[in-house]
Amino acid sequence: MLSWENTPSLIPMQRERAWVEIDLSALAHNVRQICQLLAPGADLLAVVKADAYGHGAVTVARTALKHGATWLGVATIPEGIELREAGVNAPILLLGATNTPEQVRAIARWNLQPTLCTPKQALIVSETLSADSPHTVLPVHLKIDTGMSRLGAPWQDAAEFAQLVQNLPQLKIASLYSHFATADSLDQTVMRLQQARFKGAIAQLTAAEIATPMLHIANSAATLTDPSLHYDLVRVGLALYGLPPAPHLANKVDLQPVLQVKTRVTQVKTIQAGTGVSYGYQFIAEREMAIATIAIGYADGIPRNLSNRMSVLIRGRRIPQIGAITMDQMMLDVSQIPDLQEGEVVTVLGRDGEESISAEDWAAMLGTISWEILCGFKHRLPRLTVSQTQEARAGVIQL
Image (tube, rainbow, N blue to C red; front, side, top):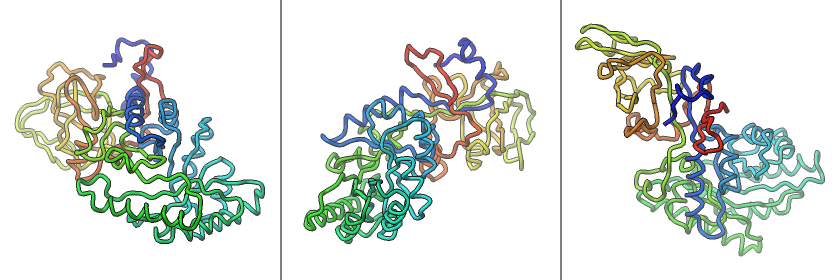
């Protein structure tokens, strides 16, 4: 466990009211574990969109590449530019669609690799490059829709789409890919239907004598489910960050949560029976009790709907939250810790001793998914990396 009070290098960080801790050793462990699962010849694309699900894209990308990933995936052009400006040189797949000449110019300038979903998009890319960069050959990735009904050309048109792109000057087909809609379900019916459609699209290319490019369809769930889905590349997001995409996949690989959220006690007081706590008096004390205020709230990404339902961890104990969660603060019933001091560290999400609270726990209470929880922590919470290596005993640095 980190000792904030006894580690001189951490003293400047004691000023932080609340923060997100990123354990790079856990991230490295997860990357290595996933790489060991891959079918022979398959590579790992680390999905680092949405600031690496709130973990810090640049730091996550560097760590993932160091420990086995060979590709990176982002959703937007600015996300790719951020990585390039930080000196990340690995191939970056832009998972979102490309629709304007301005986007094409940025993609070419920053050496990103776009996804093409329609013939119109392919024509925009080709015409823009022909006008602006006639000597540029841009790798492009063709996305086909096998059942997600989101982005992609119809799988039945795969050969026609690929033929059009192949005939366009300055475009080189780097991959053909699709995305599963239900890979995290115990019922594999839809996933296997999508797999069959993907195979059908590949067969179309073969029949049309189009060279088969790199193939990929597996997300985290599919990667953990079946090596036959790995093809040439897997696109892994949630599992990198230490969470299984579904309960039945939890034992497929040894994953360690990468992210923890912590804050500090700002005040401790005693209230009498009958005293209301926080806005709307959603909690009224039934007895004399000690309560603590901690410096984190819904503006930091703590869902307000967890009010009076969630717990935090202090000194390895599970402590109930009481009253409505406010924008910057929330209150706890700390009656079981009579000597609690202002400034003590509180684990809002993560592990303290034998107790732990996960994004999955919050998601279950809220009827949502752990992806949303991880992506919800705002950037006024500084991201601090925790290194458990002997070379970096400083322990915490600001991203």
